[in-house]
Image (cartoon, rainbow, N blue to C red; front, side, top):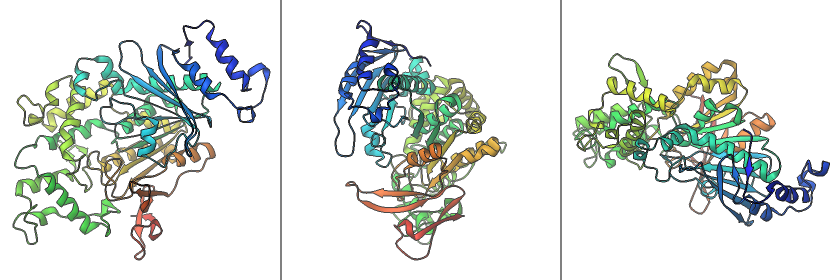
Length: 515
């Protein structure tokens, strides 16, 4: 995209060029001196010059200079708002130690706020974008509330959330980087999980030329079937067949007691054969406080079983054992599934819980509802094209996919099923993709297993040095940053195997091997 920089000042390029050329950036006055060898750059002054500019119709509303602190370099935070009449807010963070890289971070849920570089760095302390000299960009997904009800009456917000905000954001960010540093980024990366994972796969299929490497986590690659599975369970909300949160948690604990390590991590979910009938009220050893009725037992079995149409067509692979009583468990299915169903159909009845009058969730039917929802999400641009994602790999671009092995919101089993379809479609280019199943990890973070990995560092080494990622390291930190546990992060199809001795909380006690 060609960038057009505008300002109300007379001849703005002369001011910016004067500042840039005084620090001897490449191309100024015919010089070839690299920025790294030049005099000290006045980044504060550069930051100020960005304020008030417009880049292809997007207004820079503020610039803030953040001073160096600890191991974090100084950086310029550029805040911007999209075209007139929209609610698309964007930030671009420009570090003093720029390494010719740009990272776009995805959002979460129905967005509504920007995942700032500070918040992302705190949530994922191993990626360290600013410390690595990586310019950072993210947006609010085109809305300021995170409420999908707005999508029913505001078409631009719906389009921005569904697909458009990522393209607008990355093109704006690239233009800002070029204006600030005097050169475009040499390498561009995308990283996101949950809705950010959905966005990651969307940019692979829609904008393959804009990215060198994409990291996509905790998203199934098929929201039509994922939403169908969620609503199939949400229809039971408030009924006697729905276990309580405590019952869901007790069922997961029973599964980890049989299939997991002593610290509650199921290393190979595909090999777990736990039978929840042991939790049936009246069964020998069933816990009195959290035992399951026959109807509740059927619901528990349903969630870990494949979902098919009445004609036997497989739609969804089912869930691994997870803590479905947690924050992101079945209590979230109606809100998330209903929101995407509303996007697909423009019908607010999907936003009402199954217990509310007029709720479409209450009358959900797999055979009749799935085709409408799947087609609507495709029409809205909110869902995926697996062939197009495979084409991204066939261009030689790199992709790392991951999912919490105990994710109770997005099915790791269905994610892997769709990833395998993509790699089959990609043929020999499947070597450009990796999939990591994180044992015991919940939705993006949390759970019993170590939940932090440096996927960004692995991606940079792959793209820029040609070092393909193999076994990585999962780490769990406490609130003070102390390491509590580590575990190998094994590339599919390998899984961690405990050596039989040694600390179960130490990666040194495990090896990655085929299941």
